[in-house]
Image 1 (cartoon, one colour):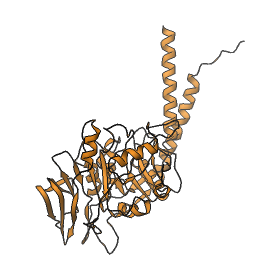
Image 2 (image 1 turned 90 degrees about the horizontal axis):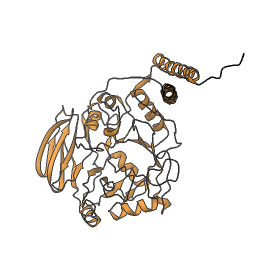
Image 3 (image 1 turned 135 degrees about the horizontal axis):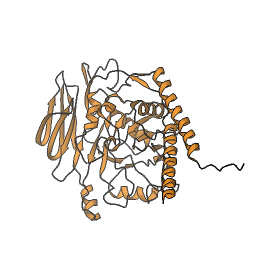
Image 4 (image 1 turned 90 degrees about the vertical axis):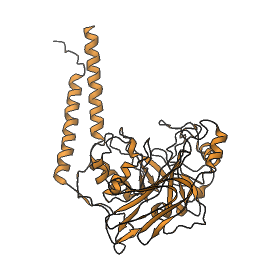
Length: 400
């Protein structure tokens, strides 16, 4: 019994050492000095809906979808053609496939091909959508504890892609308020990705002056499951489902996002019917310093701003809010009686003579001393673990 316990203990230690070595190998990173973030400021107010056409039809979209891929890490039982048909039945006009570290070919129409993948295998679920990458990065930090590790990934991925989306920050471990205040390099964020509808993580970023649009998605891993499909989407004013047509809309912000209940709770006929008559934004924009939103049906409308503060609310179809000089940004949320929630993008202060939008890359520089120190520490841990691993291995006694 004693020998068995010793064997099990030694085996556990060996496995722990292997885990430590692997984590250290996938932890190398530069260490940055981040500059103090500041709220949006400037004489002008950015209107993401400046190109809104109130007579145009909104296009329903989902940009984070998984399919069967026939490899060692298969995350979905359905192939792309099945997933595509399932979404079209629920009234979607735009669908992109974003499997992990793999570009998925559109099953029917090559003109609708969108090269996008979800980057990240980290144990903390720190994932990003990478749109139109020049190359794919397979390296990932398995335990990205440091903001610098996360920032390095955004910097590298962003240099080789059109734009990035921060995926499900509410479900990502170690996404602290400090992380959201410092991290930059993403253009859109899946702000509603959990139980809460308060969008706290997004407000933390906006309050620090990091401008990003709210793009919520299903992150669907099984389109045949009524609980997983058609739960979150966005509505765009894009001329078509082609990438070149919806890309500028995503970057400009002329769209809104929606959280949808599981209508019918398994009764697909109810789910189809309710998804065909969802509420929408009829008008939204900016007049002088007044932001406003008009809905197709009554709801509880809220205006949120700096510091995750509720600025105004009303019951009805219309709400306006005058941005004072102290208001750095304003965004709207609308809660309908049937459980649907609509989120607008943010109106934010900026200086139009300097930048086209409030989005700027927050400055950060490599701290070479800490970078060398951190990576030497990882190397030392690897060497020590390898030595300990070899010491724990059973050794045959040499015959005299």
